Length: 564
Image 1: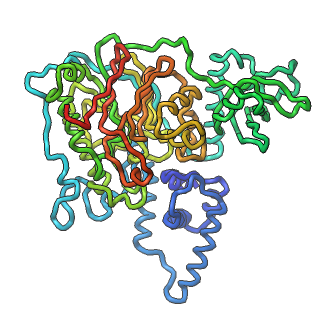
Image 2: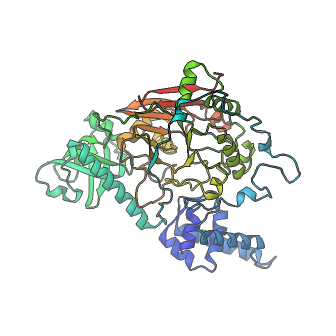
C-alpha cells in the first residue's frame, strides 16, 4: 500500500485511504496503478475509490473486447516501466523532478535517446538549445566591487527540504490543519486585543456573556439569498455559525474577503435563539503597526530575478545578457555601477527553467526540449555571475520538483549540473536572513487563487494580494484550488515571523510596495509575452531587476528592457 501511495503522491495526487486499501487487494496493484495514471488525462488532487472502480470496470470491458482478437498480455514496455518505478520507489525517488532527498529526475530527459546535455540530436545536428547563449561574460578589468570585501551571511530559517513527513493520509491532513490553527490562533490572541479572551467554539452556548470573542478556521463561507454573509467556523472543540448582516457595512465588507481554511477572529453577540453569532467585527493576525524592520549594518544589496524560464522560445536572452554584463561591471552609468558594486545576493524565486509537460503543447514553445538541458543551460548562465555574489535558487511550478507546496529544493541529479561555491538551493517557500534582514521568498502560485476567491483582488495587481497574505499571515490557505498543498505535519505556508522583505514572482509583473515595515516585491520575469498571455490579453512587465538596500531598506528597479 505504501508504494501505491508514494507512486501517486509523486504525481501530485493524494490517495483516499479507502482507494489505497482497495488497490492493495488488486492483483499486481502497482501495474494497475501505472495503467490508471496513464489513463487519467490530468492528475487529480485526490484519487477516490469511485475513480478506481470506474477504471477497473472500463479496463475489464476493454480486455473482454480484446480477448477475441489477441491474447491478454502485459507489454514488455509496461513491465519495464513498472520495474523502473519499483526501483525508484525503493530508492525514495520519483519519475519526474526528484524530491528533497535528492533522487534523479525521471525518464523524460532521456526518453528519446537524448543524454540531456543539450549536445546533438540523434541525426548528428545541434539541439534547439545549441544556438543559445553564444557569449561569455567576465568581470570588467580593474573593477573592484565593494560587495567583494564582505563575506556572505545567509541563514536558512524555514525550509521543507529534507524535512518532509507527509504520506497523503487523512492523519497527515488533520495534523496540517491542526498546526495551522494552533499557530494562527496563538498569533491572534497575542496580537489582537479584540480576541485575547476568545472562547472555545464548543462553549459558546454556555458563555457567561452575550458578547463573544471567537477564533476559528473557516469551514464554509457563502452569501445568503438576503445578501448576508454566512461564515462557518470550527476548532478542536466544536463549530459555530456566524453571520455578517448586510445592514452592517463594515462587517459585510470584511466578511466578503474571507476565504475557506483561513483562521480568523470574530467579535459579536448571540442571536436571540442562540443559533447564530452576529458578527460585529472580524480580525486577522496581521502585522503590527508599530513593528520596526531589521536592517543590515553593512552597505550591501540584494537583487531579485524571478521566472527566468530558460528553455522557452520566449526567453529574453538579450536582456538577460545585459543584466549579466551589468553584474560584472561592464555597463552602466556611475549611479548604476555604484549600485551593482554593492550587490551581495541574487535571489531567483522560482520558475528558473520553463520545464517540460507543464501545459498542453508546451514542446512547441521550447528551444531546449529536455529538463536536464534546461538546467544545464541555467547552470552555465549562473557561472557568469561574479563569484562574490551569493546566488539563492528556489523552485516554482515550472521546475522539476513535486507540484504540491511546500516544494523541496532540486534533486541531486540537477544540483550536480551546477558549480559548487556561491549557489545555495532552497525550497518554496523559504524563510532566510541576509545579514540579519529576514526574507520570505515564495514563488507565488497562490496569487491566482487569491484573485479568484476574493472579488476585490486581481492577478495583474500582485501587491494588494501580498498585503492580504500578510494580513492573513498565510501564503496559501485555500485547499483545493490551483495551488496543490502537501499535508505536511507542519504548515510551512504560515507566516509565523513577519519578514523584512517579502518577495514573490509567478505573474510576470514588476511591483514594489511596503506594508507596515515589510518591503514587498513581485520580481518581474525574463520571458516575453507567451501565446497564452496574448490569448488572455495579459501584458507582462519583464526584464526588470528589483534591488533592495539591506542597510536602509530602500528599493530601486533596474530596467534591462532597454540598454543601460
